Length: 115
Length: 112
Image (cartoon, rainbow over all chains, first blue to last red; front, side, top):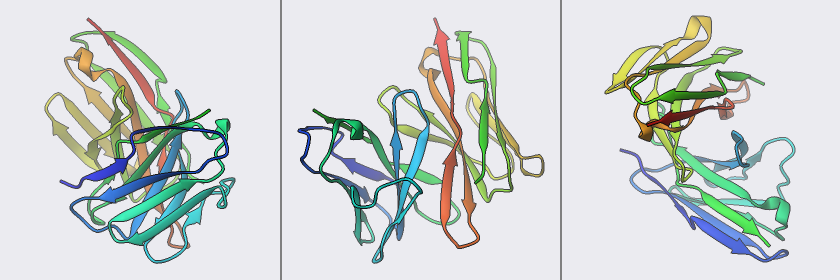
């Protein structure tokens, strides 16, 4: 079945630095990938839709200059949290869909802690 | 935007019990999925169920799209069933954007 790989699984960074998170579709091509954010004991909130070869579409309230998304190939999307601050600490998860007739598959998530 | 409501928010059961989780959605959707989020945060896809009924071992799900709800049944619960169960609906917006919108989840605790 479809597999989505996400790295790193856990990262601790200093305030003011940038962190890059990778999301790869391992056995299928994905023209569209999605990035979610989840705070403790809360649901997943869609941050942005990553489109291969074009600009990402951000949800209302998400700062596109802080959360840079690059979807340079059909199997890789990256999320870069720029100038991270403690309030950016969260669980970030990506997802993709193998085909229009299948459900979404999620990566294992990245737990970001900004100190 | 579309609203997804799950009930109950929390459920505590003894091992061996059966349970029913509900997902209501406010508008027509193109599809619906049920997920189990394990303690490590991984989202496990349980069912991709736009309509009808599906079964997988002790789990089954039913979606009645015309009435805008879905049910997840767990029979003979085991402690490993503990975690958060999410319902998510997939919708194609008028502008062509695709979105998977999550409910708030049901936190299930199975005690030995």
